[in-house]
Length: 410
Image (cartoon, rainbow, N blue to C red; front, side):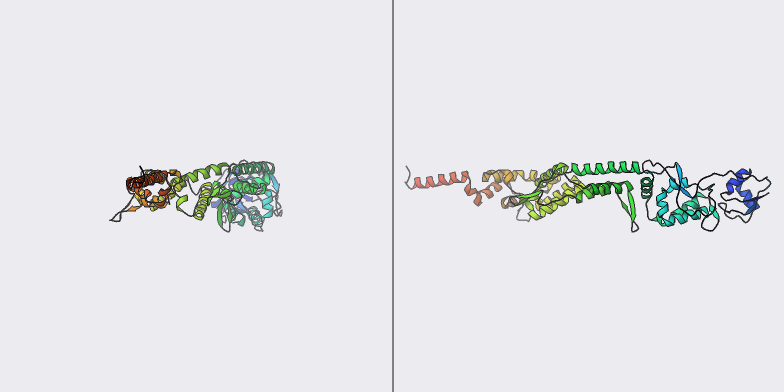
């Protein structure tokens, strides 16, 4: 039987309505080479059946679904006019704009403003002059994916745009909540951020990833941490000097982080074995790295340990067993400090006596700490020993003996 194809028909729909198969219809009509592309107005033969008109699914003009989004994924509740060419029939029996929206997150406002997307939809609907509607979902997908709109955006960008356009109230509430969380993060670290920047970063995180100049840029936790690290200021407002050494006055979590960093640096003798400018650069870079997540405390410890081993090779074995440089050097520092009658904590590891005691080179060129007795004798020979109470008493006793021996004292 002959059947004239109507706009919106599909071969599978015609076959189902007439209790036959797509293959049998194609066998009876050699001119049909693609089961997904049929031309309205053409007449085909239905093998051995009385022709029935397939049921039509009504819709409105070439629209795209606009509806509520959940977790920034598009949903569908209604069809809206998109402004795409209305030439031709207003019926879209088999093409589902809802499917397009669900797959690609196309909001009406986005479709109206993007010519490549309008052209693609016109092609799918046969409104491009071909008169042929494309009903195969895979072909529809290929056409959409070849648009500049699709190629220049990530999936999350498209979903973000759809949600923003179709559910502005919920979008605004989510945006404000995310911006508030960002402000809270900055505040906990003793940092300040403008409302405009917080909203900007919140929008970026909601998009998750974007395409710029052909490259994918990801907006994630690492991105936010780097922004926060870059916002840390080290200037006259939070730094000052004591005895030529820079002290950092930070707030919130940064204060705790800075204190821990100071302690580790002290344990490995870093502040006392590097210039003030060198320590300043290292400290600031370490704080930013720890905040950004590009460094962790173990990285810092390893860096300090390796440097300490290179400066004090004689203590390498002790440090490899888990001691810090201060712990390993403590017996020699304590011996020298007691001999000089000063607080051991006041002795820098770059002190000449400490350096000589810890990096003693023997006749064979081996570097190792000298024994503690030798370290004590080394300290006694220094000029600093002359100012100790022990030195004064010893000199007084020697003078008394000399005077007595010469009969000047009874």
